[in-house]
Length: 145
Image 1 (cartoon, one colour):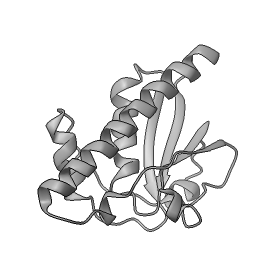
Image 2: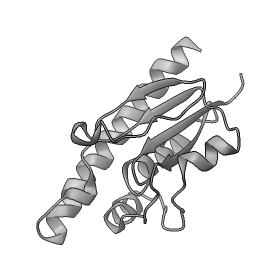
Image 3: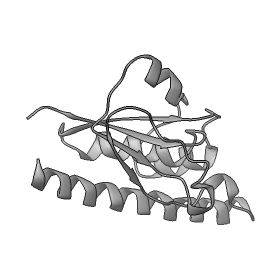
Image 4: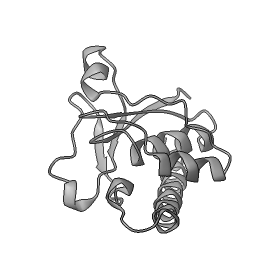
């Protein structure tokens, strides 16, 4: 079976889409290959780098990427999964082209307030939600492919 390409998209490609890409590539056993991008690429969120490092995944050298760069390169994906929160859903970009688009809503770590440790805990919760969603997706899609 050919590897299924997936693109995770959010506004800045600095947190949720980066975590989703990392989990998909770690857990998919070569059934899927993931990339991530944003409409307005930003800077990797240090909270996300830290909580991913806690579970043995180092994304500290990742670069944020632009959806439009991927589009201009002619990249095609079987699935495009947006990971913006409901409040930003109208701003969450859609990748043009032929693909099945899925929306998963996760809170944005960039919007977390409070002391560092409290923001870390909230980011861990988002990380764990994304991992669980990826695991479910892999099982469901693998059963139908």
